[in-house]
Image (cartoon, rainbow, N blue to C red):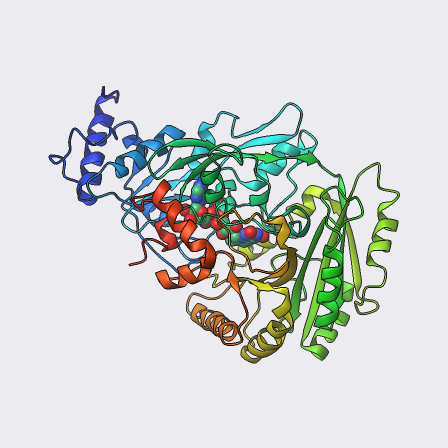
Length: 524
Ligand code: FAD
């Protein structure tokens, strides 16, 4: 193949290829003819210590795995070339797509492998990274795009996706590899239930377009597939007309049974096109640690802080039910009535309902304010020993008694947000790789801890105690954004889906190249 570098970069190219081959222990003599060309990407492969350092960290600041090189691709072909090179090497090396690096346990790292910095694709898309169809029915979105950019681009056309995450500075490929959940999930399903089609580069370097009707095995494998089957380079996301504003309400409870009963009642109205349904429902815990607001969002009017705080002190835990109803010019005169009807008869504490009226985009991007505040206090780039769980509805009371009122209050270290809200299983597709409990309604519980660099282990111990409690109490818990270190734990996690998961791995990434940081097939 012709080498088209100017002279100095030609030498750089040769140097990087040789270095990469030697550090990957690939013999030049062994298969000079067999190896595919790598020279088209050498100027995008970096061995620079700062690039390696950045690729060896994530939002968790707990795991550190140093790659041998970092690829800053400018095209899909660059990524395919790298995978092809590894796939055809005598000793294949591992490759991890890194979205925005917002994993918390090294899931986007590649120890001694190559990390693909997906976001570097953004500047080479020439405006095609997010493309809204002429009829506004879908958007074709690069896997490297951030959801905040998807929101801003689609809003310009008066449309938007319907299923979100709480925080929008995550990549499309990253959340589709997990699930992508938020308060819209009860009605629209997770983000992985809202994809028409994808382009995926498999572990065999094949660039495949897949959908429910075309290469469906790869389509369902990749959704919630933890990056194991391919790198998502494009997703076609359904869009709907975007509302203008939202009514945003929080109601406080001192009784968990009443809180969950009301949550479950509200999510029972969940038709995608049912105009009477809520558009968003979440819940969280308020505990006795400073302000009732936290980094995830500030909400309560300061004048009400004293009464909320004293209620928290009295009850030790207060449960906060949070709902949203969208509206626009056509519905602005009816939205209040509609909400009143929906919330009539709920059992929150009298006098403890608080309301806001904000722009739709401001609501969706609500976590940004908290991020900026935490950053300004040096509290963002710190360890995040998070634990995210799915709990079957039938066992959520036992979880409240044993975990929230037991372990959490006893240890008394939890300061970050603790989320708890239900979802409908029928909005998930069982053919996808994502794993959820085996009950029609299940809760997500998220302990979103921030800690100091020298005390994250105390939170980790609490997480372990919670998991142990669940195991001993027979609570059929599943981890979301799972983190395990042994194969047995993964087999247990996937349960009846393990065989299929493993089969798909052999089919799409037989040399176990992709996403080694998940430690599913590379856990030695
Ligand atoms: P990364 O962390 O970079 O990657 C995650 C995994 O996906 C890795 O295994 C990686 O190899 C793989 N991957 C990345 N890109 C691709 C691709 N294009 N193709 C195939 N595999 C790929 N999650 C929710 O569901 N709901 C929330 O509300 C939510 N809020 C969050 C708030 C914060 C502040 C943070 C830090 C995380 C939150 N998350 C939430 C979790 C988040 O969805 C996951 O951490 C997700 O993996 C992060 O996306 P990322 O783009 O940074 O991916």
